[in-house]
Length: 75
Image (tube, rainbow, N blue to C red):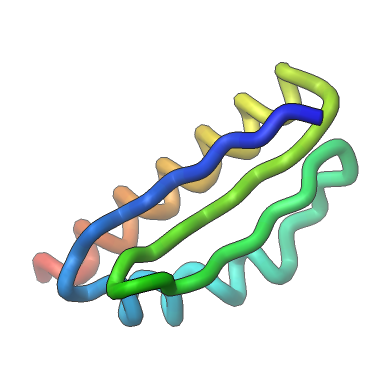
């Protein structure tokens, strides 16, 4: 089992969580498992899986969502 962990230390961690949680809750990925939490003021996204390609794809999706949410906060 492989695991990737994204930690975002940001004063807006709770807002990122609230924006991303519905997306992550509805992810149709079958080869990975994901969890999103806020720990000590940091947004933490954990992705686990056995397939490296699926893990990388899921990770890239989350990075894109983070970028989109960050850009929307800047509007």
